[in-house]
Image (cartoon, rainbow over all chains, first blue to last red; front, side):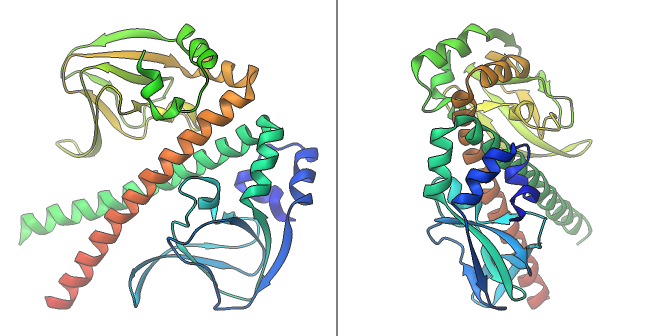
Length: 155
Length: 155
């Protein structure tokens, strides 16, 4: 399992990785198939073992904004499953035939409950990543804002 | 202390609130004074007890985007102090004379270390809030994106 290379599980000792491994299973999904859609109830997180998952923000029926391409070792998808209101924030589609490690919220939360240090480490890693994403997204807003000011100034 | 009304400290039992109270202190800052600037090293989080803190994203020397107005009971500022790289993501200015509860990262991390459940609860609350902010900010990007498409279509 590539969990060791997923940011969520950084700084976890081997025995905790073992506990995580024990509650995870593998799933293979063909190219072009959707893994989940934005707004759907989120019960699982997914680690990419082979292939690639494309994360997109749907805008209109035929328009989507690409957000990220997740390949083995560079992250996981579906972290909305770990936080209220337990819905997916983006839509995820397999860019290639993709093999995934699947972990259910119920199982990971049971591990957190029996071992709060596990929960503390994973949640710190998650908050860390969300803060990075928030900063990047704010920079995008800033660029749009500057463009608006420029077009207002020069039009 | 208004910590009980700050999202970070939701679901904490009384004895943990007491431990937090023991390491916090009060500070009063006059209207118009900056509490911190974006990019500065973040050592403290602040809870608003009286007054109001304005969070802004600096864009150019004379241009800033307002992000939030924090009043007593609706949150805290400076959570960059809790996550690497320990810098503030936004700038914070006192909108009025403001009384704050101040908690140092070193103190809150010592509490997390001695009590991982404390850390797990606070970090879950923080991740939760960051995910909400990220979703809101993505919606802003989406609106800008739609405006761009419309102006490209109708120009």
